Length: 187
Image 1 (tube, rainbow, N blue to C red):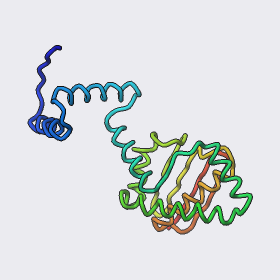
Image 2 (image 1 turned 60 degrees about the vertical axis):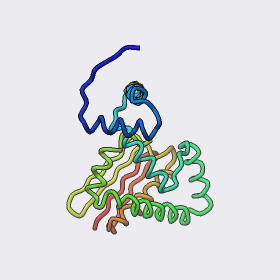
Image 3 (image 1 turned 135 degrees about the horizontal axis):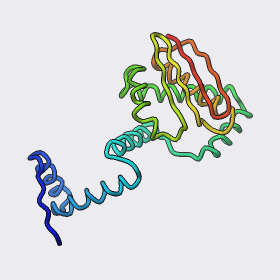
Image 4 (image 1 turned 90 degrees about the vertical axis):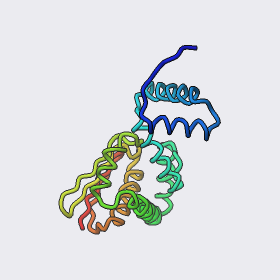
């Protein structure tokens, strides 16, 4: 086994010692596992910040009791619900958007904070594109890759409307196509 001398800050040394004690592992094994994890993360083209964001997304999903669902299954389910009762389905999605807004508002208190979150986390979400444009009392949210059907896009649009209502927006203009949603809101 080889040896390597490295310089670490006193704070880092203290943290490694605390982890070693808490985990019941040697300092060498903690460092080796850390390097191995770092290497694995970089093989996926990710970095430490991405991993932190992923954990935050997973934490938010847990709070919201969200589960990943294949888009084709979600599209099918939404279409079936819409064919049974479109008003009830839209109302449900809008209310769910409001609930999500209340949760997100805890970590992003205003729409500019949401815009910044989208810039940070958007690339990690299972969408082709997500953009928030905010000017004065107007906000536009554009989402691409929202599903295969117009019904899925419509459900997403109403969820966005509910989300924006939680931020105090009231007047809405919705545009949808298959896989595309644009919602304008005004205070």
